[in-house]
Image: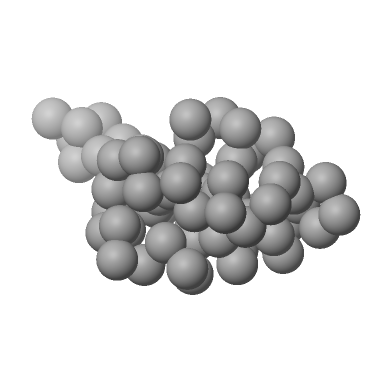
Length: 79
């Protein structure tokens, strides 16, 4: 029982630090998602119209994942 009391807070802390779950982002915020993708991918980013269409087709969780991504590979892992 003592092990459980000490390990659960440690696991929760690791999850929070590693961003285990991103906040869902609604489709109404696709402009922000597209801007974030363009900022991360820079000149390798697809057109805004293509990103916007993909954003609207994604789930709230996928959009949240993208907003939490700070590297191109992390963005790819969200889809």
